[in-house]
Image (cartoon, rainbow, N blue to C red; front, side):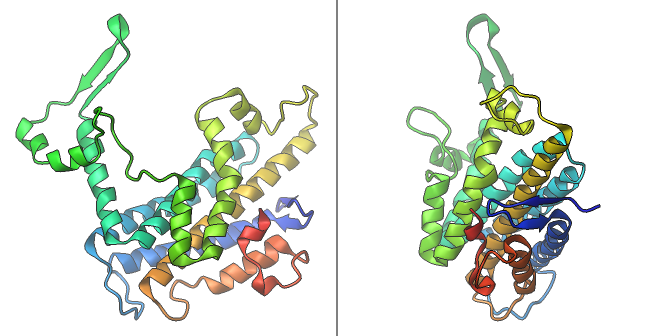
Length: 298
């Protein structure tokens, strides 16, 4: 039996149909990866710069696998649904980063690669704690090997010796930059998924008490026992949000890629899937479905 749940506007949503749409979306992601890596010709007259191609292929590949894992976990229901939330956070932020790098261009892709080198080199020598309970783990690597990457390490090390992130912009600031290049609709949709599963996942990842309540689909306002049927319905609704955020974030990344490539038509077979998604999620609540965007769900 296909599970059903409701949106905040009380439209009935079939999770089974959403799963089918995600499976089609995965095929679009796979097609994008094949194009980026030069394994398929989509009649697009655009050569992706080397660094951008390397970074995009790795990021889209991760997104594909994470989406697959989240769907398979969510199908199990119960607490397995809660385990999807940190996975979807990774999907969301990776899609934001894909779109941000495409907006900024080859220089930002190169920075992402330099950051990967710098953090890997830094990871060769790690230390935690202080005094008698401190611990240090050092990988034995020839000095001459490490020295050749001094420029990358220095680029991502502060004056106080602290490791720097690959970008100094927050997630919201990255979305602001995305809007300047790819427009308000993609930016609004990314903000929508950011305020969806993303914030809940932080509590789960960090193991807070609130994170436990989120996992158990409970709120801190009452200690009342929740009926098993009601609990399952709440997990079903949580799964709907996970599927929706997964579709929206990947759609944004794929649409941004199409715009970046200046591609005509629908090279990644997005439009039919997108239209069906709007129908499934918004139902009869949106007067003009063709003009609706996933951002309207949040």
